[in-house]
Image (cartoon, helix red, strand yellow):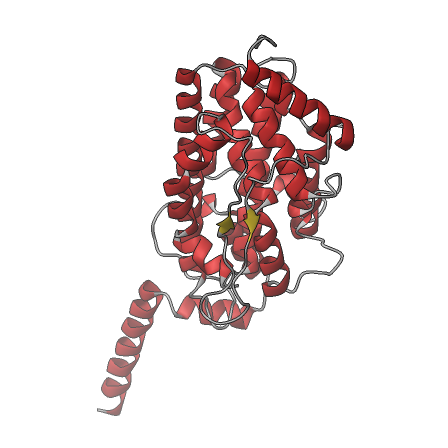
Length: 346
């Protein structure tokens, strides 16, 4: 561990004792003001909401502190993630409920993996100071959201997408073989949830007309954090007090950028599904599949097609009539019937 003879270490330990004494390990850190606060643009219009942050100076923070290295080292990745089509549409309130359900499903698998590995490393000194299960863990909240959207048998209706599975696999690898890099995944996810995630919460509630009692968006609700800004300050103080050399800090920043890339891949995957949902059959209500990939891998399509099969015979017939192969067969039948009629008249 860091020696208390180190003036910088002494400063951080003193700082942490003050924070934790006032916050009970989960609240305030009054001296620091460097964490970003969410700034929103005006509501409405094409611009929608914004995930931009405002930074305030803090004399206690050094450019070599891990929190500063992460903030500066992931700026470009953060901007790219914010400018993916899925996020831009989301911020404008242009998100379908079925797509939001799939996004929530991706979060469920991601946080299940992340929190499993955090539990595994809760006593490991390279991660233990950042272990806040009561305040941060999201799995139980996501289970509530899954039940709201899919019903009590939700587990039978979902599956992990390809992009999400790659993200999950990386989290498990890190947690089991390079636990110091777990810091990057926790930082990227939870600090984002407490910042820009709160903007997304309001957009989703408004765009999807979700209940004011917050069913469906429990993921974004941190019941055991009374002041998100102060908690983030405490979290940063813990980051900066970790006993890490410069090489390890660089690897954590690199891993944080990798975490952003995994998230962007999930966003791109959702965007492709969203575009396929944009065109829906007029009568049967079954979305038109673009022919790419296995339709059975998408729980939304499987559910819709299953319902359609048991639906109105008229709607089913109309939907079938729109298929090119069926139209070709019908055209051939009409031609045969016309020929027979002509023969009969002669």
